Amino acid sequence: MRFPPTDFLNYGGPGIDGVGRGPMEPLKVAFGPRSETEQGRRALGLEISPLYHVTTNLPPTVIIHGDADEVVPLQQAVSFAERAKSLGAAPVRVVVREGKGHGWGDFWRSGEDLQVFADWFDEHLKK
Image (cartoon, rainbow, N blue to C red):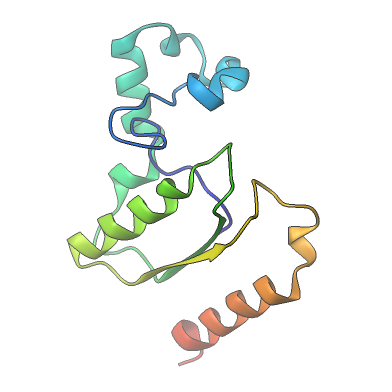
C-alpha cells in the first residue's frame, strides 16, 4: 500500500477528527451527511478506518509513506503497524520516504518502491 489513511478518528494525532475535518475538510462531501454531527463522525470513523478492523488474520503488509505527507499523516501508517503488532498479526512493514509528500510525482514509476513490493511478495508469498 502507499500512504493510506487508516484511522480517521486520530488523524495525525490522538483525538484529531479527520472525518471531513482538518486536512480532509476539502473532501467533506465524500463523507456524506453523517459527518455533520460529532456522533455521526465517530460512528462513520469507526466503520471506515482500517485500524479498527485489524485482526490476527491480517496478511503480511508493506506500506510506503512519505514523511512530508500533508494529506495523510505518516502517523497513519505507523499506528496501523503498531496495532497489528499489538494483536499479534502478521508483520506490517512501514517504509518511510524522506521528504516525500502525498502521491509524490511519479511515485507509481519508482523502481525503488516496486522493488520493495517485489521483495515483500517474494519473502511472504513465494513459499
